[in-house]
Length: 126
Image (tube, rainbow, N blue to C red; front, side, top):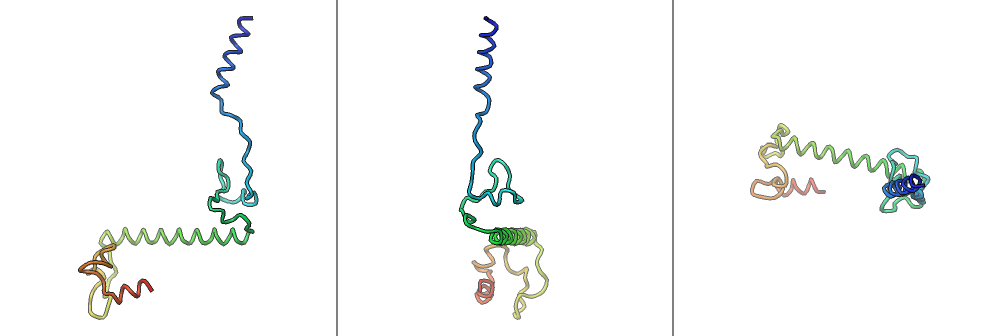
């Protein structure tokens, strides 16, 4: 009887450290749960609710745009690293004979004493 009580106490204390069993959360986005990128424990993650009432075409469009913007960001970062390393395009940036490497890197190329001309800045922004 003593062994049974000790065994019951041991099992009760071991159960205190076991993870609690929770039910699987149900979302309204079960249509996209099998898409690439949906991983446990979150599954399909849409915190802004952009795809609450979306169909497959809308999902594909948003995924395409997300990949496109990611690639543009990667190229922008690579361009920043290359330029900061001192590698610039050869040739002149304008007809006055100013070369690409005569202007500073980063935000100093737009603001400051050695900045590109305002007409060049307008062409970049427009």
